Length: 194
Ligand SMILES: Nc1ncnc2c1ncn2[C@@H]1O[C@H](COP(=O)(O)OP(=O)(O)OP(=O)(O)O)[C@@H](O)[C@H]1O
Ligand SMILES: [Mg+2]
Image 1 (spheres, protein in one colour):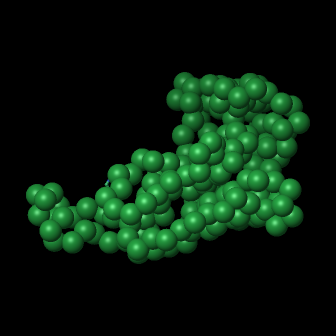
Image 2 (spheres, protein in one colour):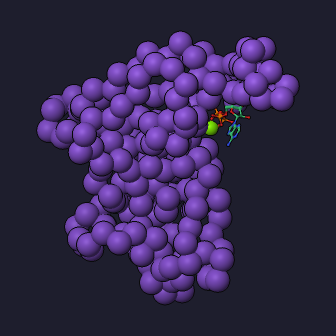
């Protein structure tokens, strides 16, 4: 993949302003695989994930996600709604205690819950308790993981967490997807941008 400001003819069409575009990209993510996208700042990693989500206009070539594939997305900029922590993770999905507990553990959120006055029933977001950047990122990641999607798009999911927490999440969330892929016990795909 390469990325660059657009060429001068495109510049002309846009009143002298260069557009950013993803170029020379040939990517196929197969079911059961884990793909890491690595590149320098501003090279287009987030744009690539946005394009998979259908949020970027395509000017040429082909791009598609297989029909019926559900997507779990943890954006680079984690966001939290004015809801309880639990509802921020469930996000409308049915509560499964086993799954919920294992997702909180994988996302290293259990010790945070112990510090919150009402545990996972604590209101978070603008009107509630203000979480740290790392906590927000882990709640946002937990939401994506809880959604049990076919394809997970994780945009720089470890950027705001400490090294040891990052190692835990890498092992239990990202690495776990890879292990499942290797043993073929799960059909999930992962795509992580860093
Ligand atoms: N909403 C937008 N509108 C216009 N240009 C954008 C928008 N978002 C990003 N860009 C531009 O697109 C280019 C790629 O940005 P992108 O966020 O995809 O890079 P990145 O590889 O994810 O960077 P980082 O490592 O900082 O996360 C940059 O030049 C950026 O300024
Ligand atoms: Mg980015």
